[in-house]
Amino acid sequence: MQYALYYYDMCPFCQRVLRALPNVNVKVEKRNVLKDQQHRKHQQKETGRTTVPCLLVKDDNGKENWMFESADIIQYLKSQ
Image (cartoon, rainbow, N blue to C red; front, side):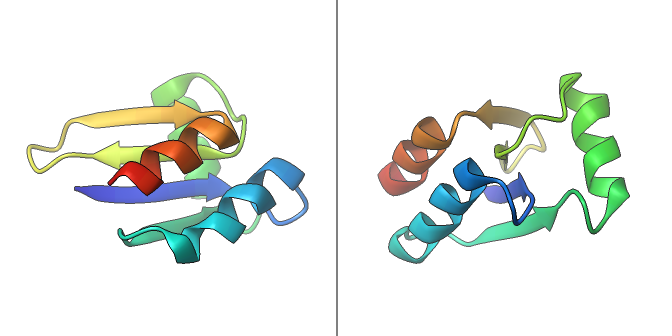
């Protein structure tokens, strides 16, 4: 499984997820959508939304699942 968090620094909900990352047992790539517009464009293309935080979960077969809502993201990552 691969994990990527779409976020930006000034978003309080993103900060909530970022603070939780040291307490999870998986590696999560951080993708700042304001510093790299390609990340924002990819998220918008795949989800139709630019809302952050957003977690991309890609399984070993390449299937992508996108998750919004900071509390849901934290709960999911802690369960992995």
